[in-house]
Image (tube, rainbow, N blue to C red):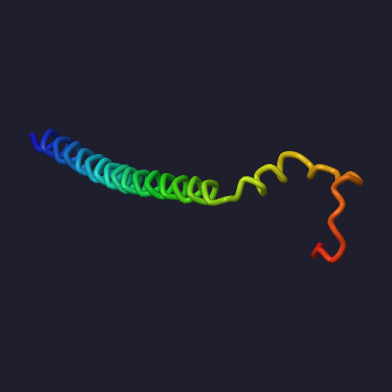
Length: 84
């Protein structure tokens, strides 16, 4: 009879250890979930800021990034005394 009691105690001990490990895993997963939501909020905030920057950027600057400026011809000469 005492052998059966010892075996049950050992099983209970192993189950308690398993439960402790599962609780640790659960806390880690909860922490990861909280961090994931915080990261998603930060990414969305950065996207909004980037869109605002692009909206404020003048169209001339956007064109200059995609195409070279037009070349000047002799007809485009500025009048004398005009600032360059």
